[in-house]
Length: 290
Image 1 (cartoon, rainbow, N blue to C red):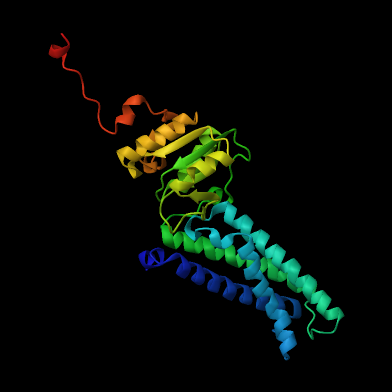
Image 2: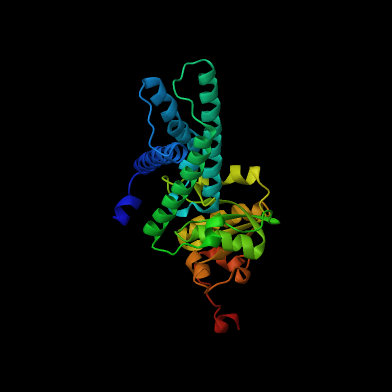
């Protein structure tokens, strides 16, 4: 089941997430109505239903504009929680304003009390955040970390860095690099078309073709290159391009080495000339030299 969900096309995944969120927003609205009136009070006229259901509809629109549906659910992190809160708050304010204006003109038969708006907002945020945490646990098989969820890390790292190459542990390693080296991660480079220009835990994913544009927009100090994801000619091309721009390139075999603790961020060193060969150096023949 897990592999089936992960392997779905991006549009199918997004449709499932939107449908899931709409159902939760409707449930949160019902809970807010019960909390306010001590009973499930539903409108009996079309105008009333339209006014009440405007909340979940605007909620989906708010989440869309907040960028929630550009995120990958299993790697959402603290940035996703902030976007959830922003989208829900904006949609609740818009819903309250519309309901108030409609009630003044006697167009709507149901006026939504402010307490319902507040209850809906709080309930919806808790339900959406909890559901995403459960999805994270199901899809990754990991345990939930409060530190990861809140994404606690320095607000303004000193050096801008770009991570070129992607694997499942990349978001976690990006946070480790940002924290241990005091970096600001500008973005991730990955050539999977289904993930390009989406966000993983707050980090935007760019294709290789967009490197020049990313470098033009940002003053990048260092690049972390996942060498195992690129062929030798491609590595040489990337290292030469970054070197010509005066950017230091640090190379390591896999992000899993950092995640597992076999390699520390402080152990990473800039690539040397021998690494441009794309093969092991050939030692000289002493007899021939003599």
